[in-house]
Image (tube, rainbow, N blue to C red; front, side, top):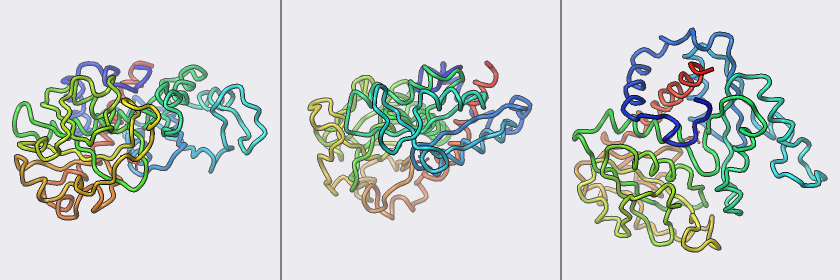
Length: 320
Ligand code: CP
């Protein structure tokens, strides 16, 4: 395994889930794999869960994690080719990437979408430079369009808590004061489409995800109708993906608080579990009573971030 961006990179999902179960039960059983190996975790953006769970996963495998916060611990990096570097960015990725990869065996990158240039973001311009100019296996730790470690952890959580063989999983858009990238909903949709679940996306009009991620998922513009009989409710905000109107890319088209997931929304479900990737804005995305209920999975979901990261790193170490 030399990259982890999309669901197909993990291969057979049943095997991946079985491996995740093993890793969770015996996290230190593969400590020999990481001996004298280093993973570099490069953050262009803030993080709590991804940073900590990636370090913990690496340590469980006996690896040395090295964390670099770009622009705080390092020089500010230029990411665009062909520019005159007369601003505040002292170093170009073209040099920084091969230098960083010369110091490690695996590399993980967090680099959010800028939300101003759809083509730049959807071409994964920054992440792909790590493939082009680096020479080590690359993990997306949430890049412009995908967050695969999160989606894998979400699937592990659904597998652990499902009460029926093929649960109904509803991902619902919810309001947020800031424009957020589409990486989490893109990856969640991609992974749910590949999993054995009945997957529905509830969203206001204009929020259609890119077809390469939405696939054949049922889209429902009536949130209450979508939630009827749901076994899992996955709330998330995202900004306009610019599918129907490219000029709206990255914009906030709605702040409708009627979409905040509250007790009335959960009442039409099949006593559903509530999920969110965190960080979450309480009483914007979800009401206190829903996130604080025993059916809220946000903490076990976050804990499974160690498991998903560890399976991915384990496979990469095994194929070095
Ligand atoms: N869910 C998630 O990726 O959390 P962080 O942004 O805190 O890493």
